[in-house]
Length: 432
Image (cartoon, rainbow, N blue to C red; front, top):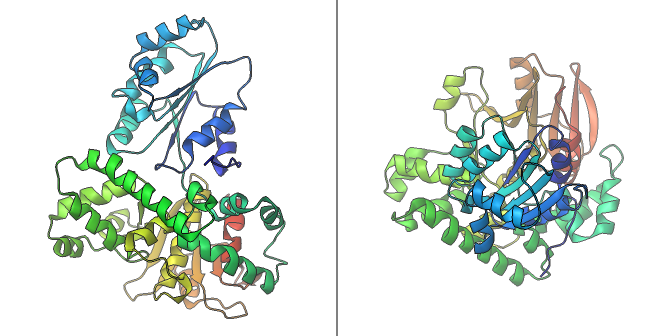
């Protein structure tokens, strides 16, 4: 099956990114569309640049890229002098090179006429080398599974074009309900992996999720935990998938799984580095206190979450529906939020909580998720409490099931945004 090509969120960032960078690296889990994205970017490269594409899952390509000498020898055989010509190298799956960052560093330092676009599946070792060896020499972008907006474009271009024209200020409840029942529920069930979205039947979608899951466990995880017992890792993942949106208690996980606390922390780190989970820290002025408090847990793709717990029944009937809504909002935030912004949650010792806090450029924006069908804009008490506790607030966001409007309260703009329009809204939301 050919992967459908649409303009991903990241494509425009790549175009802008190369204005100030000579090495751009795309990191992401398997099957999120890294190769397709690079092939799309390849079409934008000027014909004046000598372009070479290497897929390092091909042993011949891998051998060429093992060292600068081997690369230079190959290019010379193709009639290209590495020191003279303006080159563009696209290197897919660069993590197969043992010393990839060393190669990139040499190219950056010695050959200023060469640009590199590389992709890799995340690992702790790669992340470490990127930070240490390529500091100041590269730009790293994370590619996630499809956002809801991208998902709609994959499903149906005409539906997407209509969606593009929608605005929270003038959308009807009937239109919102249609998107909720026709598209959002399917997105919650099967997630946003491109190949999964394109498959027509529930059975085929589940089988594809199984392939993605098994490939992840077999290729990425076994290499990272080596001779350790992978069953404890699998059991941890199952527990986490059933606890999305909850506070994460490391000691409790250690006791339940009967493994050491440091082992739980190691596995959590692997899950984060391989783009399966994301831990959200609490918002507080004392950063030391923040580190000591329990984070909240989210999975980056709901399809993988449902496959892990073995449940593809309707989301709307589940007791943890609210957790799936929160998980959706969080995944949209990390796909769209401006880079300088930080995302947190807020919780007081009295139990007052706000789902998400965006912080950046001396402004903080509280975001609260309210799925109940109220039919009218109601400001949650937690938002009022947050207003009282913090002064640098100009606006707040209430993510709703179907309420859509903007009101003014105590000198602050409060936006009520239907969940199905959240990606459109947050894409335009900047902290300036």
